[in-house]
Length: 168
Image (cartoon, rainbow, N blue to C red; front, side):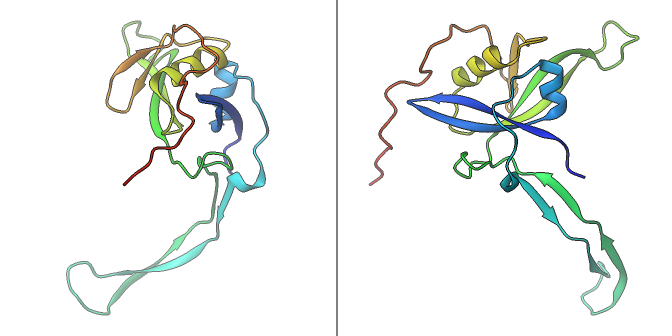
């Protein structure tokens, strides 16, 4: 069974809004207002099948075993309005500890993919506006840089970027 998800709109500027597929556990924990329910196009399915595992030490036709691969269901992070963008990974801190019994244990993080076209300011503004309960004070990019989410809110986080770039 596929993990439950919700669709949350993100304003990336210049009149562009993209849908972000967010897992239900993140929506519940942070109190995110869901924009829409996921459409059938988000749900992906793979049928169960078998594959042959061959001997790895030699180039021959000997089949060592036949392995069964289970069927799977998942929600695609490339939504209907994301333009096929896989996105970039960000990590968001929670108020939970890795080991609740130890006060100095590290804070647990949740990972989420956001549109690659979103600037760091647009991501920070999105987190500040959408994460209602237990709002995080920062998020971490894939390269490990911490960006604060306490940013002034603007109607257009990336103005003047309406014309696509011309490549020679």
